[in-house]
Image (cartoon, helix red, strand yellow):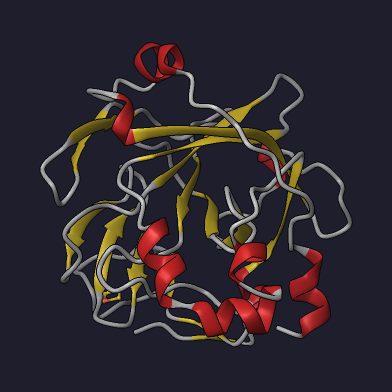
Length: 242
Ligand code: FES
C-alpha cells in the first residue's frame, strides 16, 4: 500500500481506559478478568471518516483497522454465513473463555487481532501473510477454506468460531475484537477477548514501528473515538496466501 493510504487508517490521539469487571462477567463469560480487556468504545469508519454500516461490508473481504493501539492491526470480516455461538476456547496457558458470536443482522460480522498466535506474523504496509481465505479459494493450510490462514507456517483459524485453531503451529486462537452493532447498523469496537500477544509484539518490531509510526511510543498510543478501515489489499502492497 502506498504510504498515503496507510496514513489514512492511522489513529490519532490516545485515551487511557479502565477495565470494567462487571462487563467482563456480565457479557463475555470469561472465567475472570484476565481474558477480557475493555478499551475505549471506538467507531469503525472508512478511509474518509464516514461510519461503516455492518450490512455494507463486502462479503468475505478482509478489512484492516488498528485497535486498540495505533499499531495493532485487526481484521474485520463479513462472513458468508452466520457464525457459531458460545464457542469455548482455550489460551496456550490453559485459560478458558467463551467467544459469543458474530454481530450484525445475521451474526456474520467478526473481528480478530491480525497478529498470528504462533510467531506474530501480521499485515504491514509492505506485505501480509495473514488473511481470511474465501470459501471458493483453495489453501494449503487446511482441507476447507472460509477460514483465516497465516501463510508464514500455515496456521489456520476458524473465522466463524472465535478464531479457534484448526491446523498449524499456533497454540491458541487469535485474540478477538469484541464488536457491537448499534440500531443504525454502525459498528463499534469495545474490547479484546482472549490471550493477545501485544506485549511480545511491541518488543519484537521496534524498527517497523519507527518506520511506519514514528516510534514505539506512538505505536502504543490507544485508539480513540474512531478507527479507520481499508481493505487488506489497500493496506498492504503485497498479500501472500498459500
Ligand atoms: S507466524 Fe503464523 S503460522 Fe507461524
